[in-house]
Image (cartoon, rainbow, N blue to C red):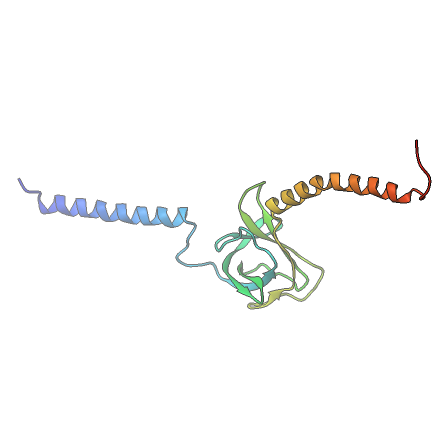
Length: 171
């Protein structure tokens, strides 16, 4: 009992449709696009981009207007290439900041517009940047500062002993 040619054709079509559906699902879950939106590339250099990676969002006023396309080290600073959608003007005095969505969420670049009338073009650089806030560093500083509180008390007591005049004895 062999399948007829019609049955083989129908099974083949369903198999091809299943493969196409899996490919579309994979692209959408991976947030990949076959044809990128038209846009332009801007650059920004940061001292610390802790946790930022290619594919992360670029936001303006909380709205996604692009994404990170490349990260490289240049002159001991992290140089971030951002692909910004066409029709979204970014001015010369804009500030690019690395933010976190939630307490330990994903990183993204937030752009705050400035007062300038000059709009950046493809390949231009955003000059004003704010690096990522690293929670672990802040907690470490807090712990170190609270631990040094005992040392300052010892310093005060030793200073009071130095202030005493020699030759006088206390009872």
